[in-house]
Amino acid sequence: MRFEKLLPLNSKRRNVLKKIYEKYITNYSEEERRYLKWIKNNEPTKKELEEQRNHVFAIQPKISIVVPVYQTPENFFQELVESLQNQTYSNWELCLADGSPEPISYMKEYPRKDSRIKYKVIGENKGISGNTNEALTLVTGDFIGLLDHDDLLPAFSLYEVVKAINENPQVEFLYTDEDKLEASHKPRYGVFFKPDFSPYTLNSANYICHFSLFKKELMDRLGGFRSEYDGSQDFDIVARASELTSQIVHIPKVLYHWRAHRNSTAINSDSKPYAFEVGKKVIKDHIKRTLDVEATVEDGLTPGSYEIKYAVKEMPRISIIIEAVKMEPGELEKLVKELRKTTYQNIEIVVIKGEKEKSDFEKLGISQVIEGKSNKWIAIKEAVEKATGDYFILIDKHLRNIDKPDWLEQLLGICQDETVGMVGTKIYNQKEEIEHCGIILGMNGAGDFLYQGAPKNAGTYMQRLLIIHNVTCCYIKYALIDKKVFQQVGGFSTEMAGILASIDYSLKLQEQNKQVVMNPIVAIGVDKISDHIQVEAQVQSFKENWKKYYEQGDRFFSPNLSKRDTGLAIKIEE
Image 1 (cartoon, helix red, strand yellow):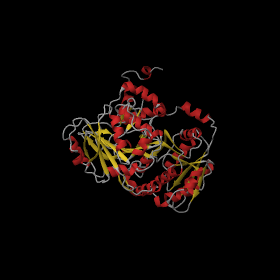
Image 2: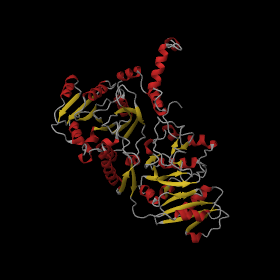
Image 3: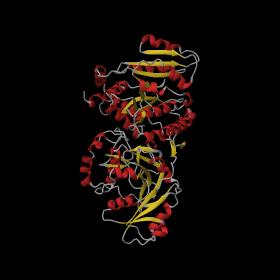
Image 4: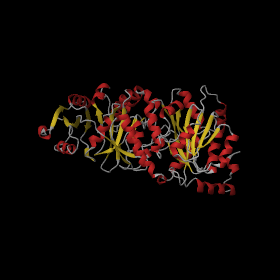
């Protein structure tokens, strides 16, 4: 029937529906409305769910869902079990370990009704790690999924997990996107679309969280959970798992619903304040094991995020290369004075000068002077070759100030990691607005600067303006670059202009499996960034040249987020 016949204009039925809509829908924020629309556009229909139930996978692993329980409310537990029994993939088992003072009476009935449910009474509360380890003793499956006793899985969750396992037979560790709900009948919200595995992002926050699954053999190697990390035991297991395997798959689908109630950190971060203190120990220990350096870990802007300073090994030389070709008289002296405020001592300053530059280079302590060229990238290449530093950073005339005197130490502590090729900085303008904090590959063409125009220290998605994190690409100016790696990959292209030069060099690093890391703790004030421009004549051939990366998309930016909005929005239709 046509809509007009069901709800005639000015009819009582239409007016009632309008009031319901205004009460329950129009009160949503724009982001919440977009998410509701995203759910409608992206999650399977009833027909598709039925097709999933009938699908036969080549690999059919048993998924063991491990849940430690402790005085669990019956309504929460019933909904949890129903969410499993409604799964379109049925080869699972639920392993429960009860650490309550007295066995939960109602829970004993479930194994009698469904043989896939296993229930073990511990007889004492061994804490979250100890209780989870007791649940692990019940496991007979191939993969182990971690689920809290009050959270839920959508009906297609395990199907998508098994699909990913079939597509990646060597996988040992999987994680998914997630959102929140207050009750199973209420709208979901607070969606968290995650990047693919990001080592430096993980050091700054446990962005992986829910839903995590581990191959049984990997969990055996990990030895289960460790009680000394209770409160952040999931962070510890994820960090240690990432040390033992590179076979990590992110499934960019919302396959976990985190229940928000007053005792849950989903809605009340103060419910477990000790967890964030334990999180600091997780990070320090993980960094020590993986990088063999000490790290200072402080609380970030939001609970669960951390500000990290990586210790510097030895004192390698850093070359600061200044593009001074178009500087006015006195500008170079002013800029050098700002750079000399650094607390890092082993530096040299190299200048690429213009014809009119008359500064007293010796008095300014300039170690190398390079004549400018018609092609600036050729001059920069010559400056890098003549520089004596192990690392270099490219500065131009637009620099105004650097917020922290230890900025070079902050960058070097990361860049000394042999897997890292470049460490970018947060750049802001005179209005205290963001100019650069990472480039998203494929955004608005070849790529664009994320959060351009946002307040300098705004709280954002994943706190990307405030925590150290992985990116695919970053601006090559004001970034610390490993000179040896620079030479290995062939340096900057002399043919590129504008933002394409930064994307091109970043992708050269990706080709060599070198990480590009953003450190927004280092904030640099500038007049402007002059290299936003994309030369349209080059964009198409550029994207064709780097076709593999454009086809796979930006690994550190969810495919569920818009590539048109640099301020970040859920992708609906593009």
